[in-house]
Image (cartoon, rainbow, N blue to C red; front, side, top):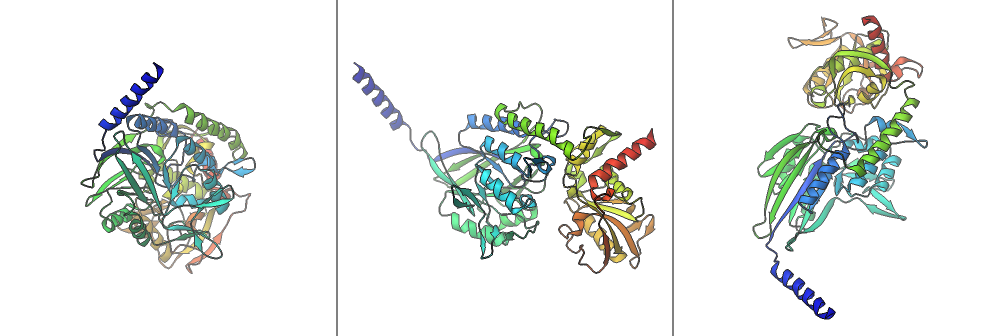
Length: 506
């Protein structure tokens, strides 16, 4: 009797599978993030939060098991949490990798801020990660040659690929291979990194993979103008999932769709995709999903997030003696959101540059800071604490007092104005543009005069403004504050400036 039941079951299974047939069509889903620096919610808990993203991820997996989770670069740095020490070592993105491991990311791209950390720390993060990385144009410099970055696994070096292939199958047996290509913007030069030409490498990696898969997608971390050029070079890409700009974008070049979500997981892109093996046609339907407080956090990921937030709370006292001290009460919110901070003069930018001047007893002609240094992506309102300022400026760094020729200063100001929309946009103190003329303390700039200007130290490294560095002959002198001086940490200067303002307003 038992054998008969088994036989009936086997026949039923055989009949079921004989009825299911590969129809040549398959549906799958991509969940896209980019430029995520904070694991916890931002803007007073209203937006973002990786535990909330994981809830969306799990819901999509229930809808379609062929769901993949991506991050298009920039996640190891910067964050305030990344600057603290645990067991004698800076965190440097360890918290992000632990969270991302728990979320089971399917693929991540290198972003330029992955190279903010040292080679040693980056290697640790690569080794700790359970998810694959991809890039065609960033390589590790060695004494002999440039080689792919790699993960160390039981004594072996497993290289990061120029390309990535994933095979998926649906319930009726339709099976396809999906390919991915990736490049990173060469905007963060480091001794241990070699950047290949983005466009040469992306074309080469596409040529290497296109005949091995059914369809190829892009996962990039470059400027939108670069993504558009890639779309023109490779018009058969249905979708490029990009990063770097921090604000959501939806562009189309020919048949190539280019998407970017908002930074810090304020939004995520959901791409529901169908592919027909017979016609070779790919259809992409994209939805920008806001990640907000209405989404319940995933319990497993939330435990990890809360663990790291607890560490931050205890360790931050090593950096700021009274991190939760209220230093200022604002009537009008100080605007540090990414879009305005990179494109217009905001009141938060005014506070920071005024504090830079304050650090030198206001004995400077002006002060300048690049918008990319300001990373809070939020508005500060009500009672502001010291730790809030450290979140605003997680990089910290010196305030430099620089003697600079008026002609070079004008070039710098013109460059910053044209850089609106990027991190090179400049916030200014005692400088304004009136009728196309730059005014320094109300007077037209004198190209022959030498000005004393307070700069954030990053600006003098030549990364954002290529011609502004200590090597420029019109940079006459640079004063670097001693560790005991207020100018030795821009964050502490802002804290003390706001304390002074609060006293005056009482």
